[in-house]
Length: 239
Image 1 (cartoon, rainbow, N blue to C red):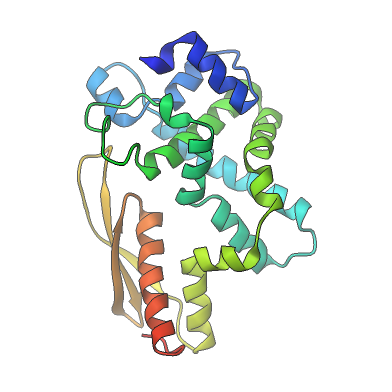
Image 2: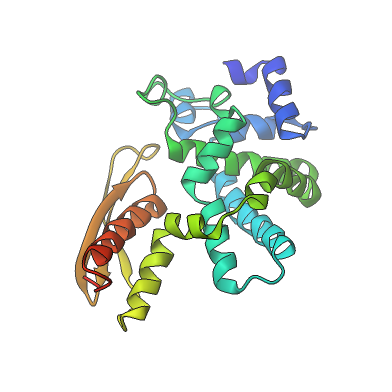
């Protein structure tokens, strides 16, 4: 596979700004569950993605606190949520040309529209975890600074708030004296490596919106977007 060729990995390392001492970790980070399932021998990147998710959240929060020392908790939370969201991570992954190096199974190769957003986001988190395991926190911090620094420097809070629909909905409901919304996974379908989550958004115990997505976070944001739009159409009255 292309991801296993030394020259290809070298170019990816150059874009990351980190040369791996042991490329086995990088290869695992690039291995999607669909490939691992078909190969029946290669571990996939899901455990690394789990670690990378927590690690990225920590490093982004740390960077934002240093960059915006006077910002309140609400502003910092919204900026962090935007930076670690699946759309942002997928964009960073595409800019890194990570899609060209992913090891995908037949069910994911050649999918119309290219590699799915959730796969790109998860792979980026897995790669960050691999960097940390290969060379420690300082190396991971350097990669995050290189990849996300320009985004953090150019953050527009108004634009961020528009993208963070869950926070926007919660604030709108609080302003109307309504309780915090709850999200409930109604059903999950599809193979383990390509699930589709169906989420219901409940306000006062009543279903206010339904949406689907490749991850629970994605589905919840989509449901919050629907509910928030309904509120705005009604002139600020919660559904």
